[in-house]
Amino acid sequence: MSAACAQAGVLLGPSVMGQIETWATMVFPQRSLLTLETVAHLGLLYFLFLVGLEMDIDVIRRSGKKALFVAMAGMALPFCMGIATSFIFRHQVSRNVHQTSFLLFLGVALSVTAFPVLARILAEIKLLSTELGRIAMSAAIVNDMCAWVLLALAIAISEVDSAAISSLWVLLSGVLFVLFCFYAVRPAMWWVIRRTPEGEGVSDVEVTLILTGVMLAGVCTDAIGIHSVFGAFVYGLVIPTATLGVALIEKIEDFVTGLLLPLFFAISGLRTNIRRVSDPVTVGLLVLVFVMASFAKIMGTILIAISY
Image (cartoon, rainbow, N blue to C red; front, side, top):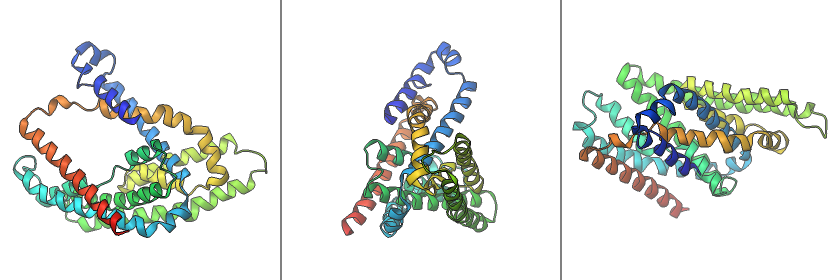
């Protein structure tokens, strides 16, 4: 479904239908894309919130060691290959760019896991609630945290001299956010459950406040320098699944997965113009990046899987 939405977006966007001037100006003008992107991003936030709701913290704790090894193996080899690839790109795309910053950026680009896409794939093939799915998501969390710290370091190196301070800020603030969610937000959710009379569901006011918290969590992690979906996922993770989580899933799952999330993948296609990739050298470099990233990611995780 996600792939179909993305393909539809490519067909409706500047790659195909957007070449028709009337279509581009009347159906999908530039000013409308900003509104659609805002709605699509909200859909992505709430989807990762739902993913967090459906995952069991205790199971994640038990698979923590495996997830850590998988994350490190899945990131180390692609990162090293990305650094090696950066020297190939030096004369093509990294002119007038700080070389160390570019080296880190390309290493992160090849090694990072697309957290929302992974969650969607696991959900569609019914693996999200399995042990394999939990290990994959736990590893993706570690992978994303490392990637955002390294990305902050790359940006800091290219702009200011306080690179270490910037990276340390992202890391410590991210850890503090997680601790706040577990030791402040989670007890508050248990308080909401205890004050709800037995046999009655959660009130609409409480649901509204909880869903507002999703956006606040996303704003917090975005301000820290980590992607907003990470905040939504952790926020969903700390909500007790037994009662409150089930009620929230029943209320918003169909709306989020049926309308908002497909819009996110469609917008990705609408923003893509494959006609710009026409130069043979650019195509060759694109294929090289794709092959190296895929090979390194697959081989890294296969090696750690064999060892287990």
